[in-house]
Length: 356
Image 1 (tube, rainbow, N blue to C red):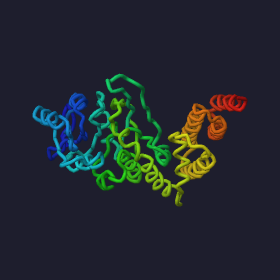
Image 2: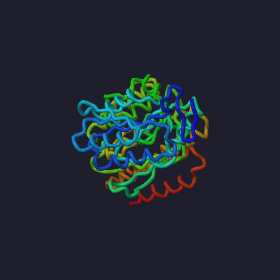
Image 3: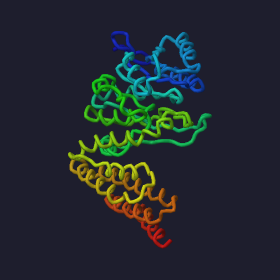
Image 4: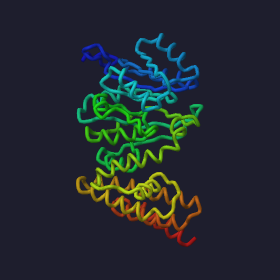
């Protein structure tokens, strides 16, 4: 490899990093997304833009950018294949050793590529790096931030229940390992990232680089909203596969439904007992192989989910259900002796709900 002031180039002349961006009818946002990538201080990369059968002006916009900058590669799908298909097509055309993801309606933040590339290059045991990111509205106005700094050991455990890595556009991973896992599964549209992270766990570590990586745009036409109707089916498939491996047994449909109520707060009643039983079974396995410090981190996170779902039931006027979730949150917090203040708060909240 050849080091330059702006980045690293492979001995065969290929860039070390390929930035992969699928594009489908994003004429309103894609210019800003591309500009944010080209403005990175680490510039020894290629930007692979996959036009996934767009019917608006996106193809013309991509062509214009390709003519302006030699680092840009445009790949055109014959028809709309969906996000997993577009990503696999982009992977097939990417030359980089590492893949940095960004979506065509989001914005890459300064310093992201240099920080993530430096980290993953120095850690052969790391398969994927993630970073904090921000949420913005359709007009680019800041909404909130996402911080995911859980250690790898806790990430392994929590990926049984939800996508703790969160967004997709803030990660960088090793391309060859992803290809060895078959790339992105076409079975889980809009949850293809969650599925892939679970598969990658057997190949290496997932770590967080504490440099904000992107601004994720929240708007009605983004893919999570478009695929909302299939997400529950995706969760069932991914969680069932993951927990089967983790627990060493088949996991029932009802068990997954109960966990979805806990972790995604869908408002179903009568799920607390079953969700707690499966959670405790998984946590027992986790404790067999992890230190007390990791156990405390995991138990605090689980307790927070019970508390937040309790808040959801309170908002729905289901006080009995809320009371049960607050009670179980107390049980999980009791595992961590450093959580005494939060335990006291939840005890007061539990008493108040019971009185009301």
